[in-house]
Length: 323
Ligand SMILES: NC(=O)c1ccc[n+]([C@@H]2O[C@H](COP(=O)([O-])OP(=O)(O)OC[C@H]3O[C@@H](n4cnc5c(N)ncnc54)[C@H](O)[C@@H]3O)[C@@H](O)[C@H]2O)c1
Image 1: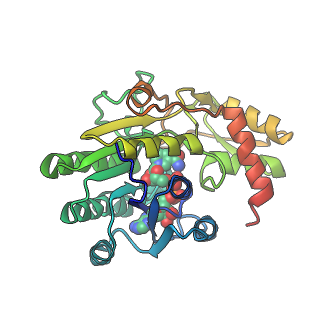
Image 2: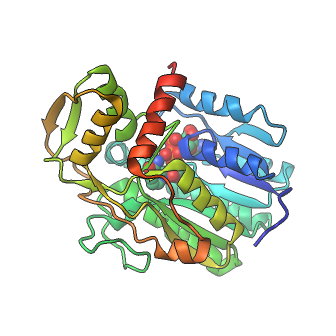
């Protein structure tokens, strides 16, 4: 476990949703943070600029606009900076767009991950955290999902790239003795949430009386996890890296789509206008994390209940979202 908080942590994807919260917490804890992000337009890059504006106020924070797929750019960046640990969150996220452009997902999520692992190897960086996803569980019938399940049935290119990322991480651990934790995040929500995800879309649309698309009959469920809880898990895993580990970071409390909409109606005080659509290809029926391993090894204990988290996200949307 590290105690030297003057270490420098490279956070890839640090301008994004989870990344910006992670950078903020690292700075609060006394780490130096080097953030790399290519600020792509998967969603409006002004979201990312706003996330960065806050972080740039700290002297402990530096930002490089760089693409993890660009090997020479990565090489230069690593040779110019002393980096002690890597938290790798940069990725093409989103299940449905990965069906449209699987090649891009493979390039960023697999080759980009290899580029960072290569830099870790060349620069003798022994600590690496990889942002994986609950989507690797596919349509697993056995719940809750636990890390020791054998998984080889991803149902989207995105899920397949995240599983591939975990596998390549294992190979680098085995070959070069890099300590690596792969963290399977379960539907993360909260302030600065991604505008392509249901919590943001539904909150903003229901609040404004705009119809929402409801896929399926409302019985699908997600193990929504508040971003501050995820960040606590990311940092605990970074500080306790030992060998190769996979951890679920979830809330272990799935919420059905119908319940989700009902909570948003109650928080916003508005009734949803619902357009019913059929289930989308690539979408899983349920996600449900078993978090006993993360609790035991990382002291991970999610604190924020769903209604409370949605209410905090709504406050952020009302007060800070001027986009
Ligand atoms: N949000 C969730 O619910 C969730 C769930 C499971 C896994 N994840 C994973 O967590 C990580 C962070 O997700 P997020 O929700 O914060 O998404 P995000 O899109 O907000 O953040 C990802 C960031 O990576 C950057 N990026 C993408 N490609 C890049 C490249 N080639 N070079 C440099 N930067 C690049 C993007 O510009 C973005 O700022 C991702 O790896 C994602 O797959 C997220």
